[in-house]
Length: 204
Image (cartoon, rainbow, N blue to C red; front, side, top):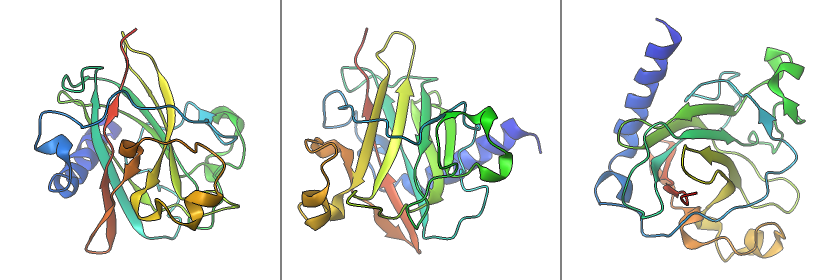
């Protein structure tokens, strides 16, 4: 099976699992305005692999699936072909690789839990991975870079709704004013954490 066909099949399987959960699949658009930005962090690696199943290295942890729709500024018009970059730590809080720069700097064996996809004709994307762990005083979080022609690129982070208002949020000095739509309500689906994260980009 070639890479493109495998990528499409992974996307379709993930869509089927996420579909019952999110507004993106049943309503005309998300409830929030343009998605707020957040720090890139020290572990962004450019030119990550094109993949929707980003745990190629089989890191242990609770399975996770996340997907959503990338919308234009009106919050209704989906953006086809938006580039979605996604990365996070493993279950113990370590990144792979534990550095930054270009992916070409690192051997394949060091690269995991990071990937790139493009939205489909309905503006949808999906990723399959594992839940990241905590490290330091940080909340559990996911990193994103999203770009599309005619729109302002955004770097941001999303969080677990279950941690909102708790000790982890109170102790995390990073991104203290994350808007409501960046707190993802993950649900359990047969042992897999499944969530929906819609993204709204401003027009240039």
